[in-house]
Length: 256
Length: 256
Image (cartoon, rainbow over all chains, first blue to last red; front, side, top):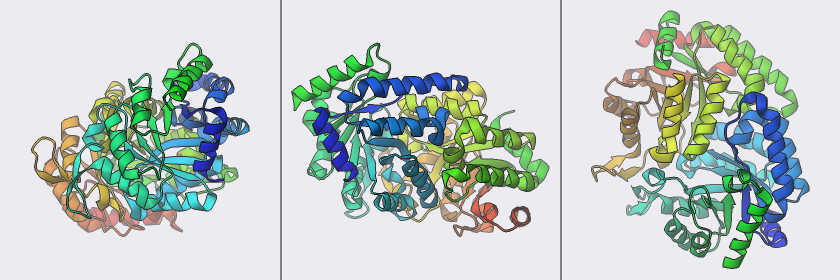
């Protein structure tokens, strides 16, 4: 089964289109074990309400991939949840290749990459590594933070048509051209979700972060065309993560 | 002493403007100890010919930061060499903050960041973390790979002037505005080094990767305005890394 099919299956089985982002605040390195336990506990109690688990440097840096994080990936896989590494990879091809090999080898099912770095000696080796290992690549199109407009929202002269085009539309077209397995657009910008959705024409699912702490709304993101909502701190920092995850899942369910 | 001053001092003392990039090919996780030993050995024998050491995910991912890499940072510092983490950080601000705290806490003296992510809730927290800890931030302006033109070389409509402007010029201006401690421009594009140099007007040093394996030439990069050359695989994969580093250092010296 492909990465896309695995996420779709998990979403159907659990009736949830919520991707859990295992994000935590900075912890002193000596508290690594506590951080590991918190992450493990969140997977244990939240897994019935989510369809995938996304990791970022919040856990990679303190725990390391071949120590703590790999065990968390195994835990997610035991619960039949696909895993995503949100490394926003954007280096030269030879480095991207090494990065992709380590993350995929550790057990990640998909990586998030920044299309800004380009194809030749850029993301081509990441897509090749993914193909070789039957893994996924998700591309950024528009991020969820305030300053996103500076880069993702800038107007560029399209290299092919010569027309003035928003950067995120250029990225959405690259996602189609390169065969991406997902595209990220922030829930804080539902009008961008709509525009990207129109370019993708249902061929690639949209993953939308920024619901909750960042202020994005579930309903507007889903109605604009997001397939999956990425939710992190609203769940991980909640007093009752399972209840919060279930509540967000239920709201999302009611929209569909 | 600031990061910039530390690099400049090391460069003067060793008469070298070469930054060693500790890049290695992918290794199976079970060979981590061998990888650590190789990296340690390279620092031991190459340190007299370089002015700083740059790390990337080639070592971070297999070794972890609070395990192997931190010991390598200590080794570099024993040799009075500043250290740079080439993480090309490009996430939302809260994540960038966590990333910066972990890397700086581990002992890195500077991080490389991608200005494409923007300032508000983007790189602002990285610059703040750097300021609080007296560390450095280096920004990408133009990378060294073939596909770099796709993003870094694209023409954008400048948000302030409304003029059509190359992306790398927009980035060079942000480096001045944000107070970056260095700017990266690939040695494979000496004409871009020259253009970025003209924008920076000597206020921020240019770090130039891509000499050697990637085909960039030492002389053209330095004559175009690069202050430092970043050299990785040409040294780390050489049969005699110390001799190669010395030879590259000597060629660079003869240009100045």
